[in-house]
Image 1 (cartoon, helix red, strand yellow):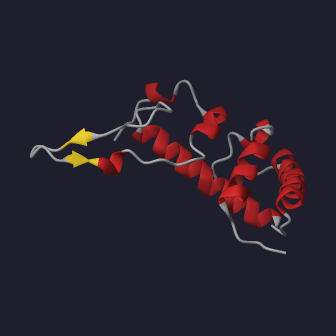
Image 2 (cartoon, rainbow, N blue to C red):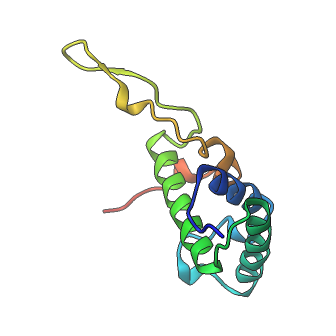
Length: 124
């Protein structure tokens, strides 16, 4: 049975996690308590049956933490909105495309949005 992450497997993980509130606030391994581990075992069963794979709970935890980190980063870079940042023009008039990235899972992760995220103050 395959254990390689594909777009389909990642999308299925996001779909299953969207129904699992305890995992929405997990950002590090230390955040996994009993409730979160129970959810991980449930997700493992669903993910492996839907994708015909053999992912372990550890693999799923690592992938979820990666997806969560990427979401938090892109959400902050987008100015705490789910909208793409779009195109920007350089001083020489050329188009800077690299800001218009498309991560297919980004908008599917809308359940992770923290409405107060943009209001948090960063102290140096």
